[in-house]
Image (cartoon, rainbow, N blue to C red; front, side, top):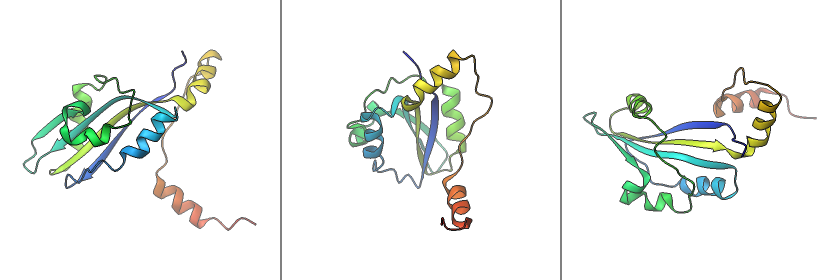
Length: 141
């Protein structure tokens, strides 16, 4: 089986305002086969800086978040990964730490590997930067 690129994303929620409202969009990506969740961990940092980690199945409040999100293997994010993510959080904040496979790119990834190619560089361009550049471009004729 071809394996697509694997990405991680840490979504912070200042003031611990996580309400699960991103779950339907994530569930649609999983259902469509666009991504496959490999691991999902919630991180909470109290006002005093105390950090707690929770797998999705350990949180009663996350039941509404987990509905429809299948494919989560768990256990792939190491303690060092979680500690680094927690360090980046401000006190009284929480985060969802996602690790997923980009299933949509599996065929391309397999073709690159089959051709002896290697990814030399990659990255993500921020939404704000793209919006700014597009706003500065002359309107299409």
